[in-house]
Image 1: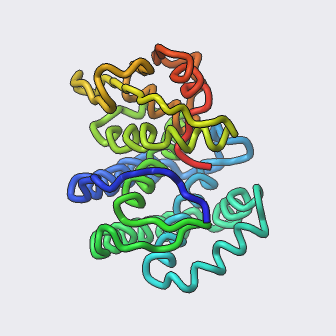
Image 2: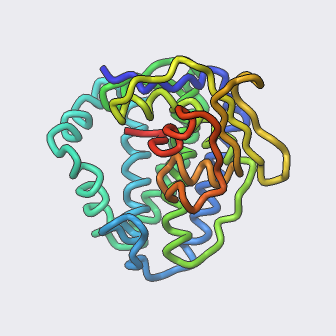
Length: 257
């Protein structure tokens, strides 16, 4: 089994879950105002419809994992069989639906996922693509994915995606995913602690790690989230790093495999 290496045991579900709902609602307001979902997004080959279809499919799979975990084995087997084409095939199938049907499917799935993640005990495990997750991790993961794919759509439509304090959950995933980043890059994980200091949208500072850590990352929370979700290359962000390992981390940072 794959260990995602993300420790989110201290997540505040009462705060993160409304953030997930709000992120979906904000994106819904944007896409529902556009009749044409054929616009290309920064993801190669993906239109706005593909992005919404991907989110809808992920919500549907999350519901299977939570409600009927024994049935998720079929989902995981299909993902393994399709390999790197899995997300593309899923998105293409959904994008072929009429816009009104896809929008309704996504809306219904978002509501059901939020309800399921609210009801399940916070630390009750359920399967997820070769690993086991809990609501403590799935809530911020769904928020992160909604925000990241939403960013693609905002970019495609030329709309401004205003940063909010919901980014703290995405940033926390990015910080927690440091070991995952080195693992995915097949680089040994540094043993030294890291300090991350990010400027929140309201000007406050969000910080993780010991204050005296030699490896340090600083910048805006927005740019950090854009970087760890691969929505922006490092060169166009305001992120700075002190220490060789911190420099390397910003080059390979991710929150997913």
